[in-house]
Length: 141
Image (cartoon, rainbow, N blue to C red; front, top):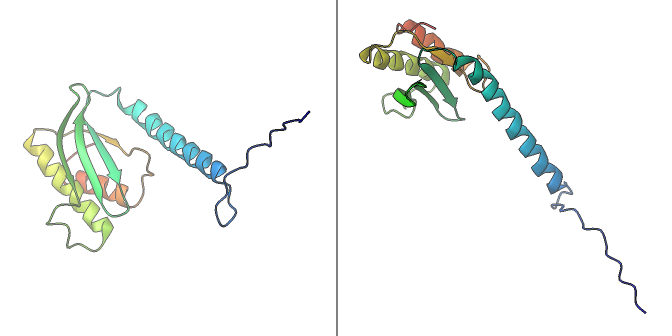
């Protein structure tokens, strides 16, 4: 009579010896924390009747848009992808220019008051530069 004993499943390990299963669970945990942080910020903003100035930051570009949550409609948006801003080398100056241009577009749509939605980002660096540019352009929040 032959006994069949199952071996425990091996963990996936890459060449360096890092446990891939653990890496994946840490990535998932980081994503969930990021989403939780963004929702915590947004939950406070949705109660306001004013439109929301939402910001997204990537490694290369910064995007900002004004959203009316009551109608689920994006009113206007702008980012550093625009040809007029591609020549700028300093990312903070480009972000400030995005805020100014977005404020001009908001004025065209008769919007003067918004709520600033920083999302999951700290109010620092390029995010603060967008806010500063929008304030200089005439938006109040």
